[in-house]
Image (cartoon, rainbow, N blue to C red; front, side, top):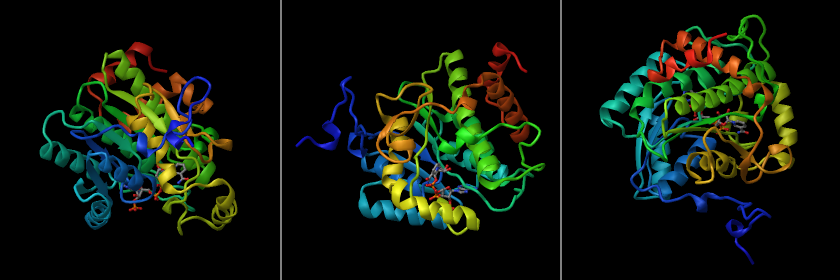
Length: 332
Ligand SMILES: NC(=O)c1ccc[n+]([C@@H]2O[C@H](COP(=O)([O-])OP(=O)(O)OC[C@H]3O[C@@H](n4cnc5c(N)ncnc54)[C@H](OP(=O)(O)O)[C@@H]3O)[C@@H](O)[C@H]2O)c1
C-alpha cells in the first residue's frame, strides 16, 4: 500500500501533502501569531518537531508559556520562546516587535506566519486604537507587524511571510466608506469577510512589492477550510453557533489537518511567490493542501494599492522601500 505522502496525481504531483513532508527546519527561526490555539498551535508544533526555533506570542504570557509547555511535552528538545502580543493594540504590536528585534538582532527571521484571528463577534467592538476588532486583529495588526518585522527577515530564498485568510474572503468586499463597520455591522459576511479579503489583498500586494524591489523573500497565503478550533467558541451569536454545529460533522476536519495549508504555504518547496493554498476537498472545506483560486475581489490591484496606503495611514507603519513601490502602479 502506498503511504499518504507517496500518492501522485497525473502530473506527478503529490496529492496528499502532510506534516511528514515538512523539510528539516533546523537553524530556521519562525514567528507565528495565535500559536497557543487551533491551527496556529498545530503549525507551531510541527515546525518545532522539524527543528525550527519558534517565537510564540499569545495575548498573555501565561497562555504563551502554557502552549510552549504543551509543545515541549511532545517535542522535548523544542526551542520555543513564549511572548506577549495583542494584535488589536498597536502599542502592543510595536512593543512586541521591538522586543523581538532586540532579542534576535539583525536579519534573523526565516518565517513570519500571520495566523491569529477572531471571527464573527456578535456585536461591533472597538479596539483601544478606535478600529473595529475583527479588522484590527485579522488585518491591521498583522499588516503593522509585518511592516515592523520585515527588516528582521533574512533576505534570502526560503524566507516567507504567510498570511492566513479564509474561504469567507469570497463573500468579502472592501468598503472604504465602512472599513471600520461603523455604518453597517454584520459579524460574519461583512466584517469578518472584509478582514479576510483584506488579508488576501495584502498578501498579493506584498508579493508585488517584494518582486518590484527584487527581494527573494516571498509572500504566500493559506486558508484552513473548516477546522474545529476555538474560532467557533462561545463568543459566536446563536445563528452562527447553530450553523457551525450543524455543518461540523459533515464538512470539518481537525485543527492538525486545518494547519496543513498554512504549513504548505510556509515551507513546501512547491509553494510559489503569491501562491494561495487551501484544502482539496469539496468546497475547500477539508482535505490536503493544494493551490486554490483567489477570491475575485483579491485580484483587484487598484483596491490592493489603495488599501495598502490606507493601512499605512491607519497604523502609522511604513514598509520602508516597499512603500515607494505604490508610486510605480500609481495611486487611485
Ligand atoms: N477554524 C477555521 O475553520 C478557520 C476557517 C477559516 C479561517 N480561519 C483562520 O485561521 C486562523 C486561526 O484560527 P483558529 O481556527 O486556529 O482559531 P483559534 O483556535 O481561536 O485561534 C486563534 C488564535 O488567534 C489568537 N488571537 C485572537 N485575538 C488576538 C489578538 N488580539 N492578538 C493576538 N492573538 C489573538 C487567539 O488567542 P486566544 O487564545 O487568546 O483567543 C488564538 O491563539 C484565523 O486567522 C482564522 O480566521 C480558521
